[in-house]
Length: 367
Ligand code: CA
Image (tube, rainbow, N blue to C red):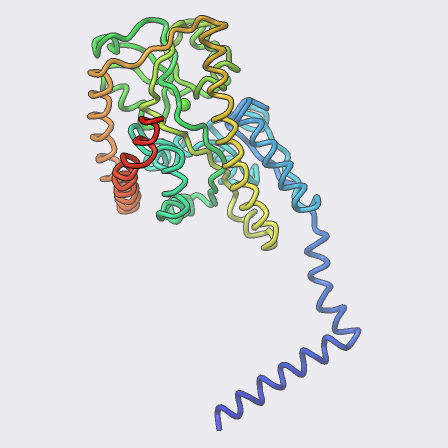
């Protein structure tokens, strides 16, 4: 009896829908909200932590915005602001969280003061490489943890770029042993800054726009920024002689697009999908750009500017690794969410490390 009633109810619904579809008046009523949604234009502001049009990150943010506008046929227009144009670089998180800008582009480790574990979504010293980070975030549970971590701040994060494995930084004198780190004042953000402090140095956080002048006027003795492509653009080779590798502190920095949760929820589903799609596309595109241009820029730095490229001494790397692992485990103790993020990250890194030995590393060695 109840099965029969369900069947009749389903049939009635179907007939109503069919009739509705045939009747002119009902059809217009059904399509009116869809047409209204399709004609609504969203004009958003994107605050970034980069100097306007900085090669790589700044130009990537612009390409992202243009792609969203084209894919949405002009229904979602994003105006990109360089650091300091709308808000200072290090205020982007608060500006998007509070709604002063609908979205932002930057790096999660800049927000370590508010959320210590945020660094795990950008770069952790001796952490994972760009392909490993992308794999963890997309397929290893990283993204769910990231969204959980940002939800209390009214933010929705997406992966939107990568600088690739970075260089160790610019120094105005040679580093021959651990003793040379004593008192050395370096621009180095994230957990790496804390590592640098414990290794005997002094760490400062400065946005990209202030790096050059700070090093030039001697306010800092050393700086890391990104890699050959970006560092050449900032002109760091003209104020420091030594370029150290590898980037133990930033084995590839994941860049983020953050969206104010209320702004995100105000978008129709297709525009949300367009934002997600454009973020995934710019993540690939920027990664490829850095791969292509880092190699050629290193050649320019060495051959045209006489930059001295040096590896960090083994004892320095060993000590930095030791401290890094200590700090990673300390971050784990912050709270339950930090514990889950760090555990997930470390388990993935261990698996990736084992596999790399028989894949990328083994292959690079025989090529
Ligand atoms: Ca860096």
